[in-house]
Image (cartoon, rainbow, N blue to C red; front, side, top):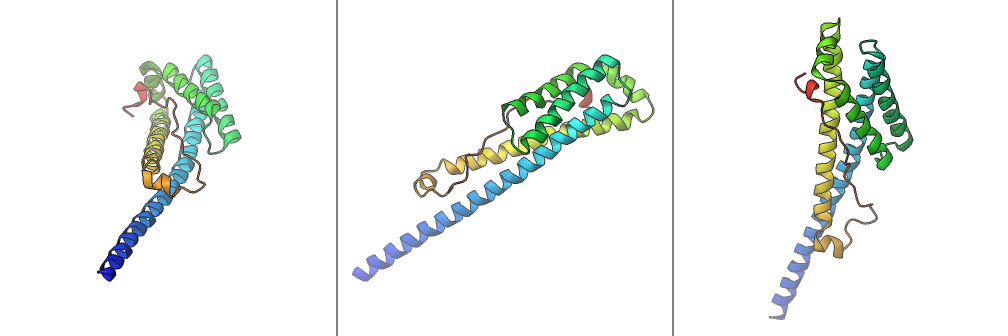
Length: 185
């Protein structure tokens, strides 16, 4: 009888250790996925700002729109360079301001004007792709963060401190909506 209890206890401990090991490995993979998605997010938002800056400096827009877009894109690029792959409040504000500038300036008439110019469709396609990829990248990053936070909230993960010293990940909350005139591109 004593041997049976010892075997049961050893088996139970082995199952718990196996579960904790797999959970720790999953948590590690999720943290790696967050780091990777944050780097991709950084690249996509820089690409978006560069596309907007290229459009603003192309001479295809009126002077007021050129200044509006160039200032917003320049501010977003400066914040990106200053913060790296981190997204503090000032960075999110400048990215949201760029989105609002795009929405305000890229109405259907402006898009039709640009499309009618030589290489206009190509310019619009590049801009639309960059804007859409940035939005998708943020959504993928936020999904990874939510998954990680769900695992970190589990009682056993907290009890055994399986997250180690990894900082608590944060979602990136900003306005990255694709302007309606660019959605069909």
